[in-house]
Length: 325
Image (cartoon, rainbow, N blue to C red; front, side, top):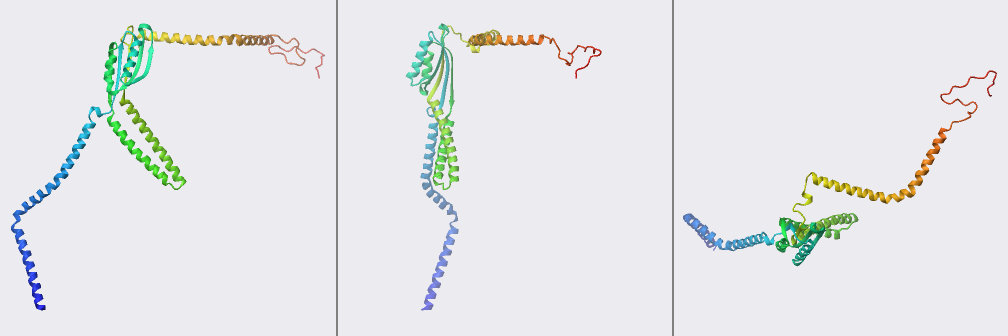
């Protein structure tokens, strides 16, 4: 029985070895078909990879669409500013119409300065209007009279706005982390140190948020500075004129203003001078005169034994006279 089992094991081992040799020979004989199998494997993997690539392409397409949406004009942050000069028949009426135009557009009047002098009247208005209504309001203001000058500028602050948003988000995360550390502090020194750091981070966050609000205000409301002048005002502004006569005129005006101020001050202090200055001056004059009179009177009798005054020689001694002990 033992011999039978050994023979069975021997025949099994021989069969395994024979099968392995046949497989090796088959592999060597079909070497040219390995490329086909590789192609088949690649083709089998391609359908599996196709959905992933399709999904990646879809994501990229979505990202590209988002970037394209962000670069559109209506999605960008743009600050509009305008400056114009219009000559009108009645400055006050035109100023009211300009303020009404800004109000109708959803804005308001940010500044109003006027110099009224009949035909030489001038009004400087600063209007804040929504950005979508900027050009419409500019055209409406130009129709108030004869437009002499117009300047429009734009500033794209999209990148600055995006950068501020990122910095604000990062700073808020830093503030939250500092608050968590403050809640976990277990000593006075750590508590004070973390509180100082938290205060500094909150101050930086407040500064960034203020800048963001300022940018949002400038982009939401555009600024239009309009100068309304009467029919008697020339095109050239007085501040733009140069030359000898202009300088002489300005210097004369300054001189007159200085003299007016000087006379005003003199008129204010003149009553005080009359009330207090005249008596004090009289007393000072009398005291000085009395001092001069005292210095002019010579001494009539010189004391015995006193030395002679300067420039006067002593008298010769009298014979037989005794000197005082």
